[in-house]
Amino acid sequence: MSSQPDPAPDNRIDRKFRELKERGRKAFVAYITAGDPNPAATPELVLALERAGADVVELGMPFSDPLADGVVNQLSAQRALEAGTTPAHLLQILRKVRTQSQVPIVLYTYFNLVYHYGIERFCQDAHDAGADGLLVLDLPPEESLAPNSVGSRLGDGSLRRISLVAPTSPPERIAQIVQKASGFVYYVSREGVTGMRDQVASGSSGQVELIRKATTLPICIGFGISTPEQARTVAQQADGAVVGSVLVNRLAEWGRDPDLAAKLEAFARPLAEAIHSVGSTR
Image 1 (cartoon, rainbow, N blue to C red):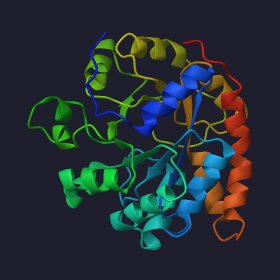
Image 2 (image 1 turned 45 degrees about the horizontal axis):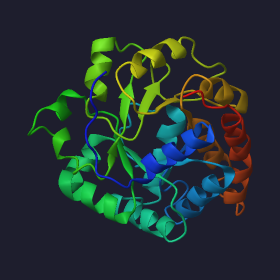
Image 3 (image 1 turned 90 degrees about the vertical axis):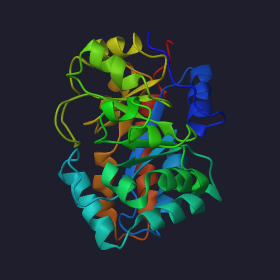
């Protein structure tokens, strides 16, 4: 088993997964795009997800060329950009959430946004504003291993580095990917882009076992989880389930509704209950 990096202490992600393990529960990781339907609405949506039972919230940074995302998340990013959402707005959202909540927050982004902002400055500003983790979708592990590589400049460990493992990743590649990971590992359960699916991907449990041989970090499965039944099935195979597109699709449907936050909370609660109904065996 590969050794893990020695991250900075006292991170909300680490504490949440320790708490869940002690309680014998799996993690509900909920994704929405920051700024959809507008930047002012996002803090209350994060709080609504927490009230519904989300253990970790992923906030997508809207980007004009989201290569890993399907049409639902692409349109969400477009709405957020049209609403004027910028990295500065994202930091404002984080600071506002932190006045009311300590829910762990992971920033889901593409490297271009981080690079344009300034790598070290972005990581410092995001951490200071209240972010706990960073998931850079298009940054390969090769850019994190060398001492002076791009990835090595992503902060001092205060932001947990969430890494993606694909269903096609062989054991040697998995070991390389998780070498610099911290917080948790995100297993992408199917090839292709994000989006809602009628069925969960088969074969996830075998790949999760391969990942467990390479790391002691929690493993969460995402991509294509759309219903409480699917969420429960996935939670049985890992330490948590990531649900995104189906929540984002509700933002598209209800974006102009004055009761948007309450509706999102009610929609997300059965997903949380399904995931939390699965007992941990670790």
